Image 1 (cartoon, one colour):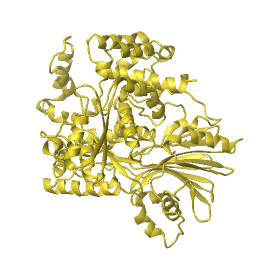
Image 2: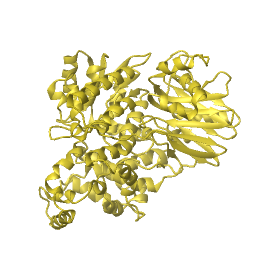
Image 3: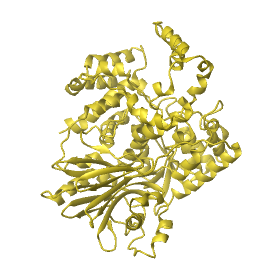
Image 4: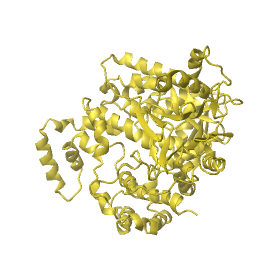
Length: 607
């Protein structure tokens, strides 16, 4: 696990520039560093030593030094791949990185089909002066790139671009507009103009100053009918195989541990000794007691921390800096703390990300069933009912039911978070584009999933957008901020092969979300844990924003010169005041704007 950066072109002071770029991401790899300089390219690398501790330093080269690689991630089947290569190649290390070099020599871009793991890497081929870069199947590891002054700059984090003399730092206002709706940066182009994310399952080639991007992996749900017990057995077998594969390491591996079934399952079955939990000193916002009790039952140690309110708020600026782009998910700060606790004991921790997207775990996935009682009516009738109830000025139970029932899933679902509507966004923004519809972002994915049922369509949207832009972004950035490698055994292509075939009612039904996975988990967890309703990572921002200290802190940001540059600040303060007075729960909308302003201060106002 590590971080890398680099650029093409022959600028003055290349070594000093690449050193400065590497120093920006030293948290990703505090153990060692390395660089490669040629007339046409510079590669930089920071290492967190996990596999082949003594010899796995990067960059790594092929036998004659014509191919160099910098690599972030883990290849869990590298030993098996190495056995197929040893007759044709001479290995100098026992690392998975060197396996990638020789696999590229043999197969080129087709190498990606052989891999099982999480990865982002850059291979420089001196023979034709080309670059081959790739990102893993589901977007676990990040990869950013951009062309500035005719040359390519790339890295594991955008902040590594900052020292490069050709990089011009500018806010991308289109990203802000999208962010206000999605709560994360959803576009390919980031909040920094000209900087792009390579999408999951894609590779990039750069040659003769031209970029070509190709998709090599395209996950799709293809439900098949089966017997329930057969489905349970397949899930159990593939998850145990994946957890075993994800434990490959030359250092100790721990596990995150919340009250949810996903991390509980991993913690109870990974055969390690250390688990890590955080909570808050509020009722219904603390999972430590649960984690301690279950740890005792399964015979593992639990290390935990109660996050004070002051600690949480003091960490917000640091978190947004490490995030690279603003993220309005309050659990990101909590994740920073659990990663910090874990980093004091281990270098690697397993986590439960991906289970909800693969197996159908979010509570919103039950909505198609809940609306079934009215869906038999023609859509025109449902639209009339929705229009009638929307004219009633009072809020009442069932009002939103009729409105939601009048819409197709394509019209209303953009993923697990939807903060500001188009109208609300245009009201608070000082310079809205006025012609942007967030459905244009989801449209290509709905088109691919057009033959699937509504539940599976929702999963497909989250798999491609929410998982990548929110869940995995914070998992990578918060763990790496603490020099900790997080591995996600649910997000394995072998697991997806099984999950993609599970029929819909085994994923989501009247009894539970993530139904078949919960049934598999009952062999390892108490029934009440395996059946526990999806909760997420609860953070008491709703309460804090009513307290004078934090209300005033946010109000100061909302009335700042930076806020005035982008927003109608009176509208922001109105949200804040209405929340404090109890006129509605606007905490998530407030938080979305506030996180942008905190991020902006870190990158554009800090001296």
